[in-house]
Image (cartoon, rainbow, N blue to C red; front, side, top):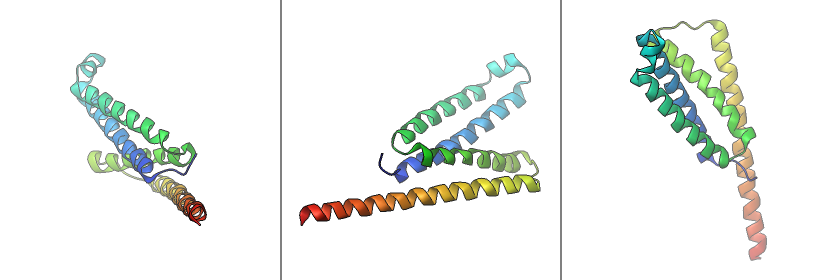
Length: 136
């Protein structure tokens, strides 16, 4: 398979944001319903399921266009968005271990993203050389 297109990477990142929105909607639905029956009737539950479904379809499309080994680690960004959501919307507190964990995730995703972009650049350079040889 050729290198992973940037479009696929951006789609996966968008999917991780949708996962965070899904978790937010589910938390809000559960908080205001109180019971299983109340939850089953809550429109936020169905909104969360809908957002999750859209994210799943987008993820499948993104994975179709790129390398799994490059794209899948980006899914860990979902953890980062959910922590940010918790702090920002629910006034949850971060501890040193939380911050360290987020930093590790961000460094890991950055390294994988950088390597994916390097490979993409090398593939393009190689394709240009092949075309140049074909025209000579």
